[in-house]
Amino acid sequence: MSNRQMPAREHRVSQVEGFTLPEMLVTLCITALLSGLMIASIGQLRPMQNIAEVNDAEMEIEAASTYLQALLGQARRLAPITDDPAKKVVFSGDAQSFKLVAVTMVGNQRSSLRDVEIVARQSGSGLDLIQRNVPRRLFTAPRGEEFTIVPALKSVKFTYLGSSEQEGPRWVDVWTKRDALPSALKINLVAMRSGREIAVENIAIIDVGR
Image (cartoon, rainbow, N blue to C red; front, side):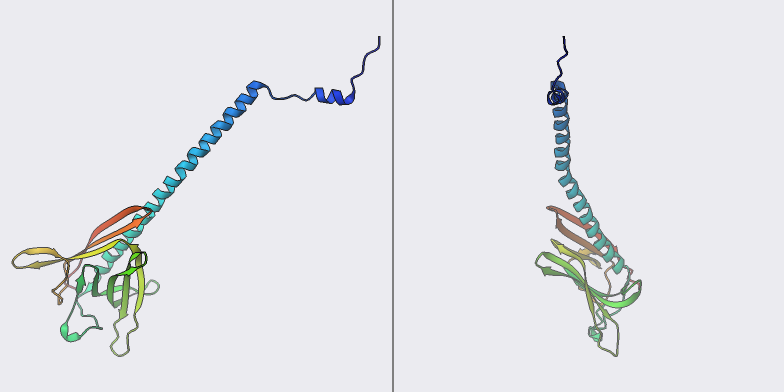
């Protein structure tokens, strides 16, 4: 009795094995689990990005306020050279601007005495907080410089600590005692960043004896 030989093509097909039902179920479960993890990660990515943007914005506004504190700490009891010397205006200020003489940074790691004006200027995106510096030169026309401290603020408010014989120390929106420095200045900055309102309030102490 002779052995029947299986054709080569039929023999190859018979050796190919498919997936069993348990293997298919395990594969589908793993795929579903990985898909769920990816969707959850993508869903958390945007909130984490918003948190990072808000933290960066808080640092930006806080840094601007700290910068103004440092600037006011270098105030001098001098009249700006661009004003009328006879008026002896040492300091002028209202709710959105102030002007004084102070030691400030100019150029790279160099400080110098300047007439300084801080002003909130309206722009398309809100209020830009601007600093203008004018060199104190007597015999040549001073050439000023201007730069933005922080852009796109929602609101800016400065208030000044003065005193009167009747009321004692009190905060005022406009500085009227222009021949003297206020003893302190309150800085209120508000910005909208990533749909969230960020507000910073700091008080700068001024050495009125300088």
